[in-house]
Image (cartoon, rainbow, N blue to C red; front, side, top):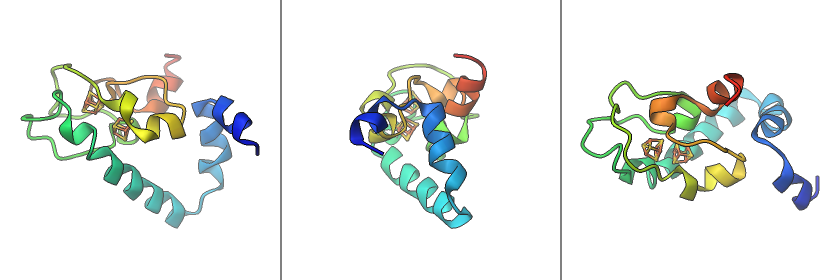
Length: 105
Ligand code: SF4
Ligand code: SF4
């Protein structure tokens, strides 16, 4: 797959191409990497700080039960947004990328 093609590929296509072919171990490793990276963004986000939330990677895991107020969102700066062609934001209050995609957003 060429780099250009990869850049132009949507979130939905990437999920089909990459995730569907991953083993359970690869999925677990990928989840850990996303959580590790997310700490630098969600972990430092004004919407997150001070809420008592400890969960991360809302783009993958879905909504937070503790974050209610929408302040800034740092997802746009996170490498996962580019890698996975995420086109939303505020996953902590809106739901996971898959949920947003399925809702037609
Ligand atoms: S999903 Fe966006 S708004 Fe929510 S904590 Fe992460 S960076 Fe902040
Ligand atoms: S896109 Fe947002 S929720 Fe997903 S890993 Fe990055 S900072 Fe976290």
